[in-house]
Length: 361
Image (cartoon, rainbow, N blue to C red; front, side, top):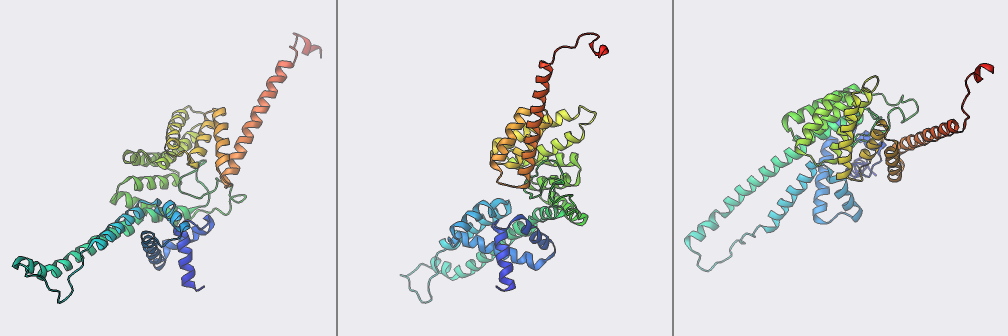
């Protein structure tokens, strides 16, 4: 296999979600630095979209295209645009062949035939311009969010918060590889992410860009700014389950950090629970929201609900690092429950101490 075809196969697998997390990160890092690699990615995106519309993808590729490739709004808009263009080409009336005779056409009709190529050329130019503008908006203009999120993914390997952030393959904090020495954040990538995502908010100002900028602030540790961005995004996307989950984990983290010596954490925990419940109502299969709700119940000392959430999470997580963390949380809760029960039984079974007995001993 040549280097070029190897790169294409790797990028194609990346676009269809076939690459494992450890192989996706180097691809995303290269996309930040290599312009030619980005151009190859855009070409392959066009080829996949065209193959999907022509029915040329295999059944597996078609499923991956629908369930993974089309998860970004930009790619869905690009597919819609390609469909419109395909319908236009399919419905375009064939031109008359040179020398074709007609039965005494009227003067007006002959004038339309004479000017038809001119109008056809103008229409084609307008169509090309419209498609060009659309591609610019969906691929270049709107890719600032994707670039910013890619920089955030490459910034570190571990979650910056106790809970799970949607759309990231980070492992639990300080639990990826022993002492976490392999997770050395690169501040340059964080700065790059901040510039991309701030620019996206300034130029687009839609729910996706505010959601992404909120993740940047969450990673940076500015919880108040993250929460403000998530709320802004919710104003135009109130049915976004991942957005509710990320807002929930930001509130949970703020409550956790303010817990020591203060009751200020209770409103944050309660508000976090509202959004996590909403996220699971909108998408019952969202593992990030279920993990975060289990944590929230635990911090609120709602131990029965937390145990139920941990058990449900373990049933659904196929074997990630987060599964092991959930299992330890559940085991710790069961051990605490067992110890509390034993202490209660011991106190109930112990005879009462008579006055003066301790002194005689």
